Length: 556
Image (cartoon, rainbow, N blue to C red; front, side):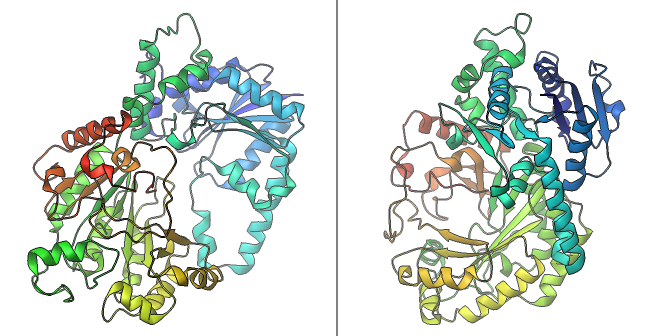
């Protein structure tokens, strides 16, 4: 059975070209892995860069390039089919060209499983991403092409803005499986499962971001420190057992923040039963806890301060998802449109805004849509702006009880309808599950599942015991894992203070402030968070972490 190897070099991060692995780049090591595969008729490299950009590769006569300035899902599948057909190949071995640690033995096991079982598609499960390829046969590609053509025909008939939006999505890493699962019963699928389940670590050894470049460089250092020498062995022959054993070192796990949550307004119109902020805020500034504190004394982040934060994020992380809803109501900020526009100027950044029933106008939404249209296309897999609306009840009385006097369920639903119409791929409804609203959960699910597939059932957070326990059930794992938020998140208060984590409530527990983004180096602040994460790896928890039930939750 003839085979070809297809390497995707579409939308590569510049780090993939850096010679950081003994004077070799991730692209070179990926290509060397492809050349070392057994019984491969040809190697085909798909790219949005001209072939001259890859002149450093020691190409064989069986290496070809397919260049397209813009790639779509259909163009990718067509290239798969054409490359295989030219070599009369039945089996396609597919990987990304920025994965330096693709393993020969693991690849062989996948190929053998695929061909012995006569499967349509085969993939490795429970391994870190970037160690193994995907295997697909040409008949499965042909079937997927048929599905894509059908989708295009339907889109042409509908001709909706939502359909147009969908076509702009970049080629994702999980493209093949995401297409297959749309009609999964039409394919014979086999899975090669790791003896050690590495999924809880969410590791990716591909150089598709600065974050993953830091992780792969740390892993490479660990490999060299373990005695590996490339002069004696190929990188593709390191063995995934050794790679797995080195993967959970802190230098590999704790690379760079991916999620930044920023407080831009001190005010909020609500007094939600499940939020500690009103109590903390009122304790410092107000006498009446029922009083809404959207008033003239409200504080807002300055434009120049926000811009300075963005500059720090870009220089440190390069890409990130940024939430503007850490505390307070982001929609109260009079310069919110500026904040949105300033963020979306950078194609590597995306936004998240969470809100409740604060009134949203059509003019406001139109202004944001215009900002998005003028902004560059996202370089990440994220949409430009995500919305999460708290709709934690089905009865108006309970909704008002949960959120505060004057809060309207009707208004909140109107807000959702306006946002969903403008942003159909990135607007979510959320039900925060607590004892007070548990009886309405089923009604919520029945009502919203007919309207959208973008619903979130959120667990309760007591903020390390700051609030009374209102959880309906215990979702924590049997064994405690190191905190995801210490590993991936950075939170920034209005005054620039950076707390250890989201469980640190403003004006409280000041001993858990790591520094200030306006006066301290962001790398220094992040290093302090790394030290805290290291204590988690050793099961030495700080006091605030002992009562926390958020360590296993995950933001984007």
